[in-house]
Length: 439
Image 1 (cartoon, rainbow, N blue to C red):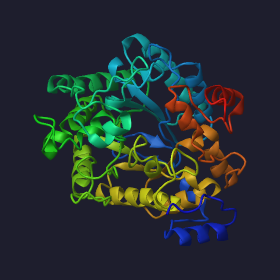
Image 2: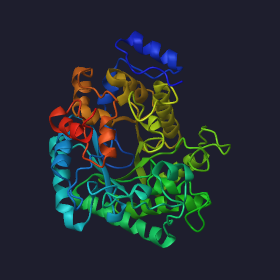
Image 3: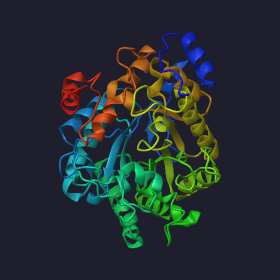
Image 4: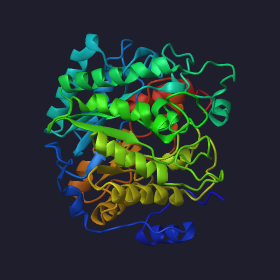
């Protein structure tokens, strides 16, 4: 039973919806906590407020991986919107690890373009920190817009989703051995470009995330916990060489995949959809020991169970649970992580689904110590100045909020530049109509 879509208009509606879905979300009418600054751990990187923007991929780079015109337009709009931190989208560290010819890819030859992006973001945000997400797309790699999966082991659950043949070769240990150096070099480039931190991405079944569940892989990158986490932690260490009080090592980290064991990380060994936090907690502590001081958390995989990491009203399938249960899971997971490693500045997620009720729940979560900041993804596509309206007006405009209709995702799945065709109609609605002429 998936439950009703989000139709709440009043606080009474919202309370009734929570009761119906069997959850109790934190909430506060006092939004002042969201205006408080946040210093990241033992660094001098400081967020001017507790509202942040998740790394939202636009698939609109130039062919050589530099930010394109639409990339710069999106960053300018988001940087001007009043958020305390801007987390720039997935940027590959190697060409073969790109999801498409439209994914960002940082290298020496296009460093000046990334410098311009960082400069614009800092200028328009009045100096808010800007993080660059570094990634290898693994099984989702399509560097020439055709599938070129780099898989760490044959996961039948994901193979079926992606139509990967059981005979497809598994990536070698020797290839993986070289990646920490690539991530370290990319982190240095991010620092040279003027970013305030580098994110070593480990979530959503991309390469590092997939390795966490490589129980059946032989060799030094599979089997034991030490082996399955080796590449991720070695890459953090390589990036941390370039850490400084002004340059933070971060991670978009998914500790629980909600994919049954042994095909998903952080799950009970009985094959149920019950999280088991033993290994995620151990890894989270080791991330801190290796130098991570900022985490933007997530759960699940948008390619397998998108309702888990971004509850929606319209998508590719009807969710198997009440939507607010998914929001509650995200908030509870953030609270668990915050308690496990208090020294990591933590950004929670799931708030965009709540529309105009997001500010109060975000304030409740931050005010009760369940997370350090509230992150917004789809909302920033639809409503790039959401943070300013929360902080200055104390509310979000119902005519601007994200409707969780998944049209931005549908465009991305077509390997096309994406944004919000509902709220940013001039640019993206014509694209949507071209991609889906019969809808």
